[in-house]
Length: 150
DNA sequence: GCCAACGTTGGC
DNA sequence: GCCAACGTTGGC
Figure 1: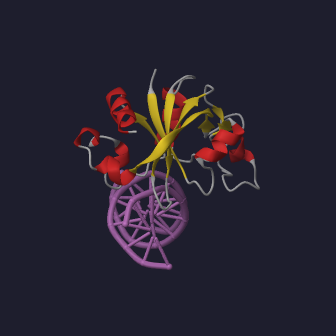
Figure 2: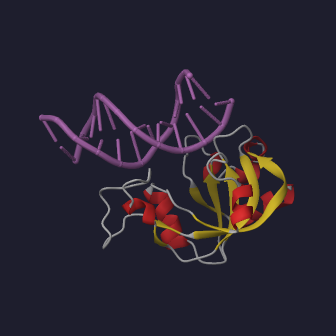
């Protein structure tokens, strides 16, 4: 089993939204590296840190689980969607997604600020300067380390 | 194939 | 709202 971190702006889709909906198709990823992680790396049952970005208190707020294999993101074909990609063809979809299932909320937010203070987490892409990946792998050691902070 | 312009992300 | 970082686009 692998571990991941996925970012979401809580104003757009928060951990509480996921809790309410149970499962969500993770649409709108339009970055090739992030897509490749979903398409090639993720398997059902993998665990995911749910991260709130671009908000008052950025940080890890909960745990989710990959709930499907990757499949085409239908929003890329929807001309009315903000995720519409006129360059993508149905017979050769450019953007893929996975379903993500709610597991639990953390008792507290493990903030970005707090994570930055741990040398053991230096290698996380999340903490690397200038990195804006919205889907990234988390090492098993990092996963356990962060869980122990809760 | 280079690279300037532009758009987006996301912390602050 | 600002702006640094960085990916993408498009003219040449």
